[in-house]
Image 1 (cartoon, rainbow over the protein chains, first blue to last red):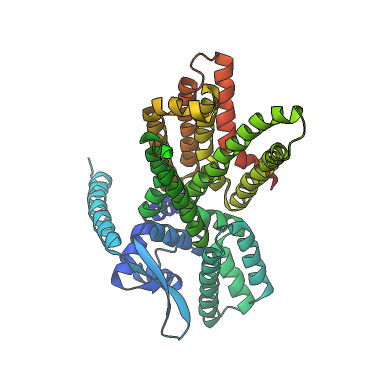
Image 2: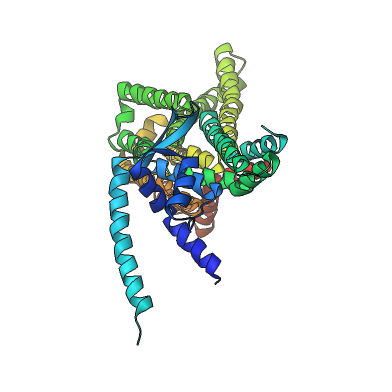
Length: 113
Length: 309
């Protein structure tokens, strides 16, 4: 397994959480989500459009986010997504699961004999 | 929009097949506005417009792959819609289990409700819950088909005694009914298959149960005598339709095609087992196996239609 594919797999499994986390801060449209993700992660995370939009549609179908067309600052109309109450709960659950996971990973991967 | 972008979106739309044009248009609009924004961003960063468009489209991936992923994302049915879809079988379970089909007012009211919900679903753009209700609506012409058959059965012998206008009209009407009825079912399947053959399978799923009941009624001696046979099996039929409601709920809620196919096959197997008990308890292994293959084949036949459509 290359490092690149390891990172890809990690990102694949966490795309939903990343999207929900960004939408917790503010409603955003797809392009904004990609920009924010790259900026906030210091360029570490780069999600392709082909990954982002199916994830957005799936999260919307499951009721975690809601999309609606709205006029943005430039005066153009964009489909803006926001977190729902169900999405907030889901994000909290994922955060606590992630904390436990990260703690356990650190313990195992940093432990020296 | 450049020809490269226009060509990409044309190919994407041809593969998307969300069925409902409103949903497809919404997806296409959103993705094209993303292309607009991203191209502006890349051009500002120094890229040429043509290279920027190419880079953005590469990020989307191949149109066929993106369309497949978007369609899969739309496969997940929200709980409310899934419960409404499953309610079609719960409705059939109550009608049969409580023998409400005996009562003309309930029978007519029930038929009206099924047709009204089907038309509402059509108007809403055929959401996932529409297909079980549309399938329930198709059982009405199927049941009426049996009445046409009974008319034929009764009037044909009268014709051999000599021409009789009423008998002729009855026979002609009954004979015409079958091709029209088959056309209606075939047309409904073809329209459903265009979006997804799984939708067409759900559309067909109420039909075998009703067909089993019709066969049982006929074997018991027709509508008058067969009603008694149905009454005796009302608890069993209630269970069958309740089982199909659960299978429909699982089908609508699952997000993978394999699980959806498995619930379809599972419900066919359940129906096959019940038909073996109810219609032909003394039937041999060959007859049972043939019936099972026919049931599974019938429910999965839209897949074949989709291949050749």
